[in-house]
Image (cartoon, rainbow, N blue to C red; front, side):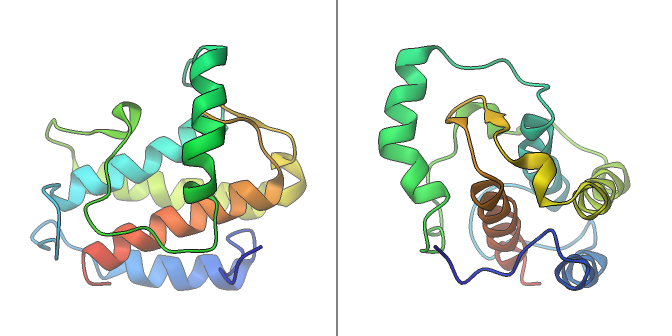
Length: 152
């Protein structure tokens, strides 16, 4: 399904943590308008969604999202720069860099601790039930995209 490393593997998370450690509040994006702390808050949303802390979209919206957006989100191709962002993922307010960074590190530790099986059949507010592999791709692909956005 993809060539992305599994975010449920400790070695993958260790690599991601090294990349995250090289971020600083002053880091500028290569594209886009988010500041680094906003980006961290933005990627944290996906983990919150997997934990069920976001309301589910209506059935018709989920149907359209599954049909048109999900193949892009969990497909094998990397995201394009400056791709449109879903409303729930938009972060425009100022964020605390250290707080958001620590939240992301905690989410990554939780992924490894829980393991892939925990995410099997967990519903996305936008796509409905997803496989652990789909969550794996979404988590890794989205985070990797934004770490590349900030040159790490």
